[in-house]
Length: 276
Image (cartoon, helix red, strand yellow):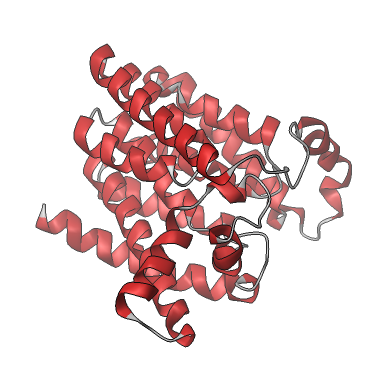
């Protein structure tokens, strides 16, 4: 356990340092992350960001508790963001091993462009559920419910991993109640984009080779993750629930933001690690 934690700290903190360096210019964006803390708390942001309340409320509550000046907000935000990355790293190490974690975070580095914190919680919840760990999956699943609308998948992944219908129903019911409560508290919000994005995503391929070199394009990264995920499920069918995340990304989100597929990457890493 201590070894896992130490490696999680090493991988997570080093990754988060690199992640911050890459996305720092985006920290003032009014579309995600650090830039929308106030607007999220004031209920002035569009969906789905409006319902991703975990870190914005944690940051503002911490500021009130510690009575800090506004200049320290970045420190508080980054501490929470780093904690969740370390949690994600520990989850992969605990369930799949250190090699899988190293491969996972090397690959995720290719998805970093914008300032987001929610992907790490999603990854941790899905991996812990895939490992059949009821209590950790439930606890992180609760954090997941305050962070992303895909959180209901946690119970499904756990069910397939364990066959435990009772545990899966508990996880699903609690997450479902949180999702409902958050939406009731925030109220109805207009989406910042179309509900269904699959036509937009398919249209991206018209300009696929305009990137020079095209291997560095976000769409290439998303395509590679998609192929890798499908292959991992074909070879390891017990992980087929991750296909739901894959499909959700292509149908409901912008596929040229590959970080939306981050939770699929540990399963690709397991496949790669098994071949080494």
